[in-house]
Image (cartoon, rainbow, N blue to C red; front, side, top):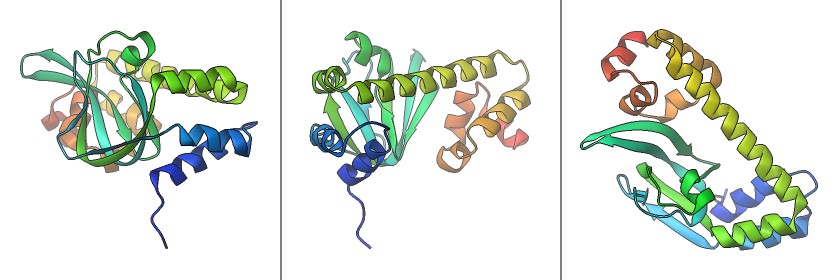
Length: 192
């Protein structure tokens, strides 16, 4: 059985969008014309860069983190297979990114330029609806994570993440999960 390409996986994802015609799917998929290969440790975005593209992760694992002080950082999210990824505040506003996106393992992505993406959103009401729904899901996820971080007990934070995203425990190394949950790796090990 042949290995699916990034374009075929993206096309399959886009084909699930209600009201998006086969022709719109094909036209939009063609605009994703920037293949990106990252080795473990490579950066997709570093603080100070302006995000100019939206990426589809074909395979791999990436972390989004905020550098809090020299040598310190806080993990704020992850990108994994079949997900969309960018430094969103920079992508949305055109300002320099405060976040870094780094590959935790070898990753293959496919990107579309911001201008092409925004142009297509203007042309396709179905895609604009899909994008709005994706943003709503992302916002709900961010709010849930904010609630997690307000809980004083690490066990409560861990339990909420397990309910919401059980798959993440199979993908993400423990030290990054601990950072995401604002606890030490030792605390996470003890609770697991």
